[in-house]
Length: 85
Image 1 (cartoon, rainbow, N blue to C red):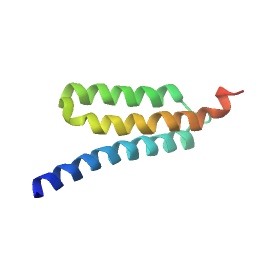
Image 2 (cartoon, rainbow, N blue to C red):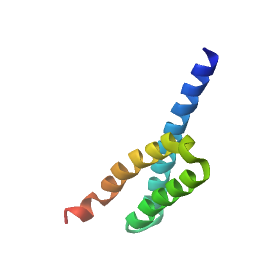
Image 3 (tube, rainbow, N blue to C red):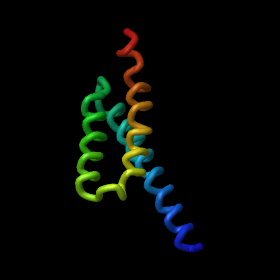
Image 4 (cartoon, helix red, strand yellow):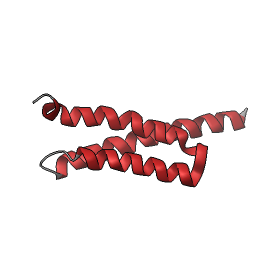
């Protein structure tokens, strides 16, 4: 049972780390740039995902899921005024 709990906690940590990294990077970009660089933000998420898939394979799928799950809402949040201008 301990191995099962360990694997579940590891999966949850991968998912939350992806969410945390994407959210913090979005906040950093919004504070340091006058206009939110949405292409750099999206390109970073896609680039990191491709690198991790090539390097680690399917072990990083939960991290990538969390990364994209946070990337798109933050992308819409910070670019909302530009989309509907």
